[in-house]
Length: 398
Ligand SMILES: *Cc1c(COP(=O)(O)O)cnc(C)c1O
Figure 1 (cartoon, rainbow, N blue to C red):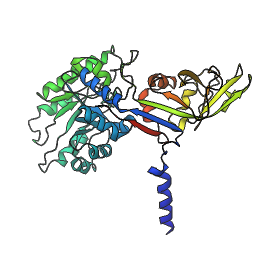
Figure 2: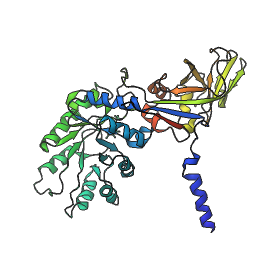
Figure 3: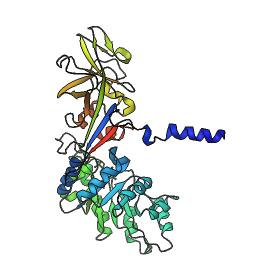
Figure 4: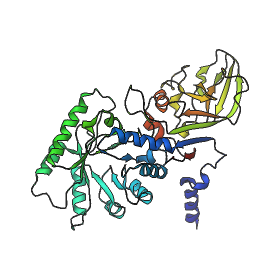
């Protein structure tokens, strides 16, 4: 009996259920997800992919925006190939997309075979060990597709090119092993001038040639921008679909998809010489009006946003900023777990009121700029947002 009670308690505390998620109107922080921008971004990347088919990468809950609405939107826009990181993500996606091709980037390991067969998931075989697991799984003659991951210079996952070439030339290769596609991943595509891009391209070509006419996929978002040579049969955009900046030091052509906002709980005055938040890192040089927003590092609004990436040192340097009533306002003091402070002194008195929402990033504040202020990239900002936001989806226009 005691054991039972304990389990009940565990499950209410550790498994967020619908009732623990924010209720519309009571939310302190919200994400507005523009599904028509999401569809437009997929179409834009499909156009840039030219003759190649264009997949959509949906790992990590579709980069934090929500797997199901993202998957439906891409499918409606025309996508039929989808990449996830784990078989569990693939199984979840299968419920939404019964007829799509779903590839699992982490591949197949012993014990996970059942998921691949049951949910019709295509493993992306990442190593010799995984190859053995896959071969054993199909040794009864069952016909199941797989993709072979070839490492061309990232040293993350994939067979070495030599080993892939040996496999292609192996006359003893079992008939049950015939990959439907070769995959490789670019390490430096966000830096178009990096010499490794071209080296990876050459190595990948060698492997693709050895497998004679096989489908092939190399380009992530940034790889698509490198040009047609990198597109092969299928491209794999992720971050660009979600509005992120794929290429360093270049204007971001994608439409913003996610707008994050937090409610202002209080507007207060502080005098010159007073300070704000933990550590008193910001000491005011003028009388200051402060808006206290209901968002903090527990919401993925990172503590490092406090001050140009050096929040642990004593610093007055403002980090990120927000947008309130159309005006950019600087973040002041340290970001705390649930609360963040903004300097609204320069906005007309009385214009900022408790209950107003401040934009943290999105339509008016580029996500990549906010991520940079926190010493990271938009990928990490998006995938760290957490569960306290109310998520509102704006329907895609046909
Ligand atoms: C995450 C991932 C992608 C998508 O990359 P983006 O930079 O987000 O476009 C493509 N391929 C692989 C193997 C990945 O892990």
